[in-house]
Amino acid sequence: MIPSIPPLDPIPIPAPLWLLKGLLWMTFSIHLVFMNLTLGGALLAAVHALRGKDRDRGVSRSLARMLPYTMAFTITFGVVPLLFVQVLYGPLFYSATILLATPFLAIIGVLVAAYYGMYLLARKWTSYGVWQGILAAMVFLLLGYVGFVNVNVFTLMLSPDRFHDAYLASPGGLQLNFAEPTLLPRFLHMLFAAVAVAGLGVAYFGTRRLKLEPEAGRWQVKNGATWFAAATILNLGIGGWWLMAIPQEGLLLFMGGSTLATGAFVVGLLCGVSALVLALVGINSVKPLPLLMGSIHALTLTIVCMVIMRDMLRDALLKPAFDVHAQPTAPQWVAIALFLTLFVVGIAASVWLLRLARKAAKEKASRGEEVNRGPGLTDSGLHIFSAEDSQAMRGGSSGDLFPRNPT
Image 1 (cartoon, one colour):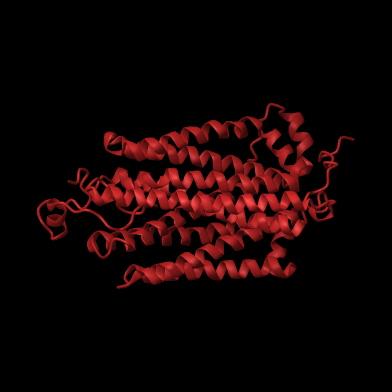
Image 2 (cartoon, helix red, strand yellow):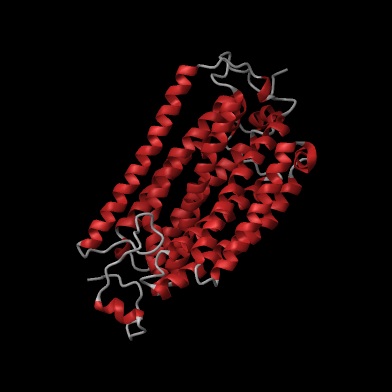
């Protein structure tokens, strides 16, 4: 009989399991933050551009300028946890990707197309007119494809008993996992989480405009917090759907079957609700920044808890067919030290590059050139105002809070 799971790699795992698990949780949490900003930011950029109002176009333009930055960090911090998954769950991951080889390999071209679309939006925003929202929507759909294929892969790898029959039924690499009951709620949970994170980002950067652009800043805070609240409320229901769709052994894991899993579930739920309450209170607060910062911290902790829950659920559903804790290990401490060193250096280099981008934006502002207004990562919050800007902020006839050609 042909085994469902390919034989394990004869080379032992090159690091202690606890270390690889910890690094997987940390790097995947960072990846999710930037991924949500990118996917949700593309959707909000499209929606605001299609609305056509001046203040909507200003937010959309700033989101478009943010996307190349967040996309770069999404890919960088996505590669690292993917490597850890391959080390820990190699036979399962590679089998699932073979069954989905065609859509999975297409991810590379789709990401390149999405990346190019982001740079077109960021560099040539004023050239597209009504096509701005359409191009942003196309970027969102391309990113959504990547997310959907990955959800298929990571749900299929939890069913190794289906590998053999699925391959014989269709060896052409088109085995999308539509038979999986958790596929749709898991994908929708990711999608609405992205909208929530991007909305909270828009609200946060709106607080940086309150001093110099109080009306526009206040509107941006309310707009972003509303998107965050609506997506979070919907996601609470989708999360319940996902929880009910998983097998019983997985559900019991979060209901007292495991102290860590149950604790992560309770803390994640409480932090998610706290983030929602703080954002709603911050909408009408005179000083919304402290409340939004509290919401951001609570949401970050929620993401970490969700990552831990997801990993523990994977281990529980794979037993007894595959027990990652039973795999042999032979730590290579020199390689581990080299990896950790390069990881820290990479983070430091990323921070340095962001500071350079911020400095460049300030220098453009000092020369009177157009600067990024709104939730972009390079926005300093300090802008050069023309006479038309000042007249609009005082309620003049112009009414354009985000002029496309500032002087």
